[in-house]
Amino acid sequence: MHAPTRMITIVDDDASVARALQRLVRSAGYLVETFASAREFLGSMPSTRIACLVLDIYLDGMNGFELQEQMAADRLAIPIIFMTAHDDATTRERIRRAGTAGYLVKPFDGRVLLDALLRVAGPAVAGT
Image (cartoon, rainbow, N blue to C red; front, side, top):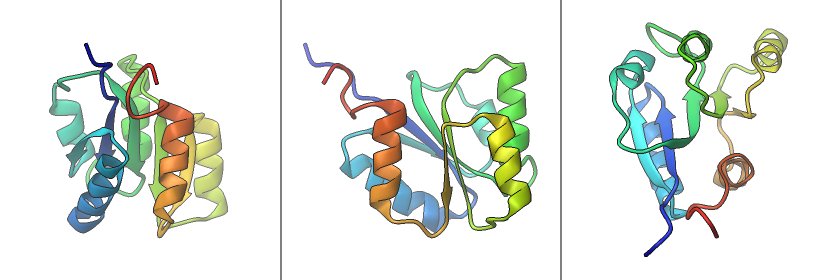
């Protein structure tokens, strides 16, 4: 029997960014789900346990910080790697206070994301 492959979930309202990240993460051997909004993610019933959530901060409707707060209130303990194109002191302080697993500034090198996923979620295949 094969060890299960870890699930990475990406929430980004920019479809081209979500597709590019999906291809990158899938190429590293992870399973990938993408959602275009925080509400879409919350309304889903994941088919498997999520190893890491890669979350854009500035989303239409509910933003990434609000999603993180809702997940905490719902006791959804999923490690989060935030990503944003808006790097400033206020954003960095909010991320620090949120206690997330990582923070990436767009645009970022794909290797940086894959290294962060390895650190946070472990290797693509559980038990390896």
